[in-house]
Image (cartoon, rainbow, N blue to C red; front, side, top):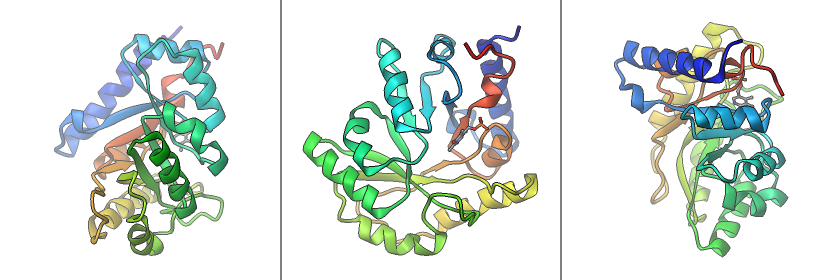
Amino acid sequence: MPRIADNLARIRDRIAAAAERSGREPESVKLVAVTKSASARAARELAAAGCFDLGEGRPQDLWSKQAALADLPIRWHLIGHLQRNKVERTLPLVFLIHSVDSLRLMQAIDAAAESLGRQVPVLLEVNISGDAAKHGFSPQEMPERLAEAAECRHVQIRGLMAMAGLEGDATSARRDFRNLRELRDRLGGLPEGARLDELSMGMSGDFEAAIEEGATFVRIGSALFEGIDAG
Ligand SMILES: *Cc1c(COP(=O)(O)O)cnc(C)c1O
């Protein structure tokens, strides 16, 4: 039986190799282990193996995993769509929201952060492939949305997040990742305090290409749990 610790070590090696191939420090790429299809017990094993950055796609699942692992120093990442009525409950639990996909959501986060007396770091999700089914800002609207975001003084914009297109192959995934980096590189006129240092892109099937194109966060689920009993 493969063990989670072995899978984790193998993924970390592949991350480091992809970073080195592209002339980057391995530490410049952070792994978010996506536990959405894993049990709390499996997530606990990941932490025992030294992985404390865990990601969930649905706010409700983040709440319940967080409660189950509350004794551990986990940094929780929300990587899926956040409904505005779930902002208040989610903010105190989360280290980084990767998936801010509308100005109205940003404003809701801003208001909740203000009442908590906090600053909340976020990434803006971009629908880089243009899939109709995907959440995210279009690349074209980004300059305008960033300008409007200047009013959200309790939200700290730290970068961009995207997924490769649903229909695409490896070549088109790499092109999507490159497009996200190039969009980041040409977005100027950021609101005060905003930075776009972080690029959250790459999943089990395409994270090496994402790293070669500049990912600073990769979000990996299934490859970590391959061969692991789901219970
Ligand atoms: C599920 C999910 C991942 C992880 O996908 P795997 O293919 O299991 O590695 C990454 N990012 C997002 C947004 C996801 O929903």
